[in-house]
Image (tube, rainbow, N blue to C red; front, side):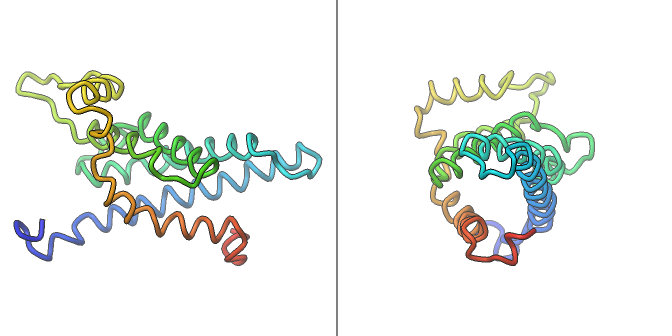
Length: 184
């Protein structure tokens, strides 16, 4: 990228990325707070077991993905009607990411979902108007067959660098390291 487009290419898409994070993260965090408060109240104020936290988290991620999908798609597309393309896969990827964060704090579980989601969102029809893949599952199966399971982990180093600050801030907030943010 540096060689072909120069240094000016690096902030390309930054505004769409920031918009996506602002909409997605705000909706996800607020939804999680509302959901967990309701479940705690239903549990007579008792702390939530892991499965209830996971269910609240998965639901909050799906809500956040739905709200943030137009901004996510705007990273790839520039027309309004396509902004919700890939919403189903975006929500599934978000739910998988949340489950891995709650269960293991290991970001590698969601990378295949992220990879497939991005490839489906970038897919363009051929000259006859047909798409090469019929669904995300079709894409994943054909990719596994042609490139093996490691193909779904394309971009792993970049993924780690991109997600590390997010996970660290999330862990500080969730663990009480930043009490002011935890009271969101």
